[in-house]
Figure (cartoon, rainbow, N blue to C red):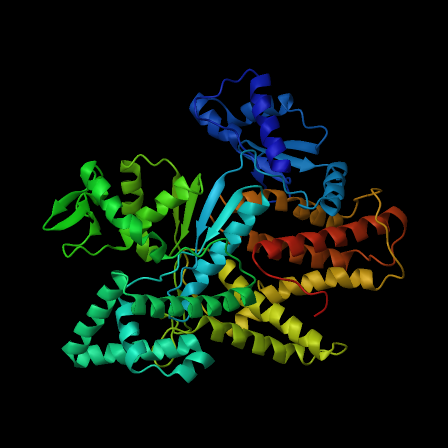
Length: 569
């Protein structure tokens, strides 16, 4: 909020000073990297001085003289080679603090132009368990959707599940020959995985089994009633378990439109691409070539195999049509791992050739590694199940909570779930999405450092202040910010308004995570420096307001990361 206002005033100062800006040059203000000189700063004078071939400090002084920020700043200085530094007034900080404690959006402004955004994330496969490899897409996608919706965008979340593919040939054959129905009733996914693995092993030992599986798949694709019934049951059982996992994670989707939803669209889509000249036949296959795109010139997009089979690209193009035509999407975000970069570059180029102008963004991410620096796997070399990760995190959190006094057994269970699940989410979201990181139980569950338990504990501390008070406390607008620790906390609280919008510039939830960690640290410093309960009058009201504002911002910020809070810990 402050940054946007100061930026606007800075741009106006250039005009007032009679300085003509070069085309494309936009003066900007950022949060100061060194608060000894100010709260916000701008290097606009230094940057522009190079283009105008003039002295940067002199130019900065000229701009400073034209600035109209008396209602916000107590001081503006020109430092170093020409930095403009802005120090906010205590009155301006107090006004923002009053807004934060009253506003449902804790002072975070809405976007000027709302967009309809489809967020495609998680996307597990039917008849297979979710594993640790789904963590990054699921948690990053959910957080970005929450933040986009919070700042005013119209968000549609779509879980594009893998519910149609070659693995179903094996599952169909196994269902008919080796399925254990009692095991299926007890744990559907585990039994379907067992069946798939067993049949897969059979196909490698006996070519006839592989032929049978392919026949079963063709029958399914042609609409065979028996195979369709089995497939429908597999999808229903898988979705039921998936929804249980998402429920545990407090993640919700507007749609579960898998690959099968677009089966009828694929053949007409390919024919249209051929008749319009976008696609062509090459060695019997249907391809889209990108001869005018140097980096893709030798990488055509295959949309139909020579045997008539369709591919992921075909389904994804049909999905784009649905999202644009039916949902009227302005933007489509794909939260999918970095190895799929080529696929999406091809996909977006085909969409461009088709005249589709909806903004499409591949939000890539790196890998989760074990302590040995290799892909995080079980000892047998299999992917670690997501449910197992969550259960162990909760179990470890429960062992810590069990030692706490004054909590009922039910409270301990609930707190352990909040801390355990939050720890796994925060361990992911506190990382830059393109960074590979090592999965560490000890680090993610630590009560100190940049972890969810530390942030949740900071929230609990804000609430404990009010539990110590007798009777209801009514906070008033009578605020007086005088101590450095009060000022530092008020300033940090005001910055949520900027950070939430910054996250979506490069799709980085870790910016919000870092901010919340800094806020918790700033609050702890305030808590040590400023006695809240023993203060009186306007000072006491101000400090209680700072505690309430911190509580609201921590709860809101963690909520945007998909992390719940608890009143006690």
